[in-house]
Image (cartoon, rainbow, N blue to C red; front, side):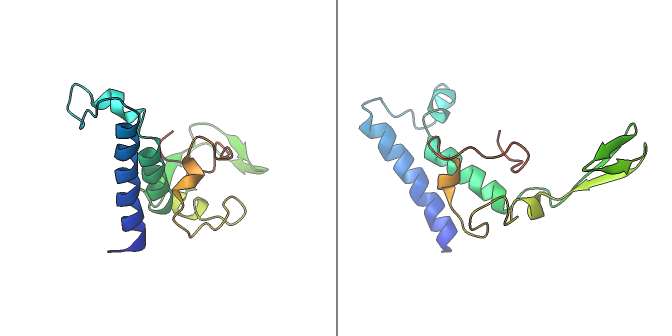
Length: 123
């Protein structure tokens, strides 16, 4: 089993153990209690966000400019295609410390805030 997958399973297990230790009954994600459990599974959410950072579901996102605009000093005429690449942005060395490393702690509540346009995952 790959290290990142092992870490993901460990994080999910730790989240459930943490729920159990809190003294609150474990909902085991029954439909009636799933929404309540999600808010308490912070480490699980961090693992999912880190997995999305490293392996975004879309390699590129393409949009057509409806009107003329300017991006980083470059003119974008109406009708132009604008291409965004989450795969590249999520591995940018100026935006992430050790961008190639699987590190869910980037997304835990106590972590330093992430720039709004650096990560396109669960927000």
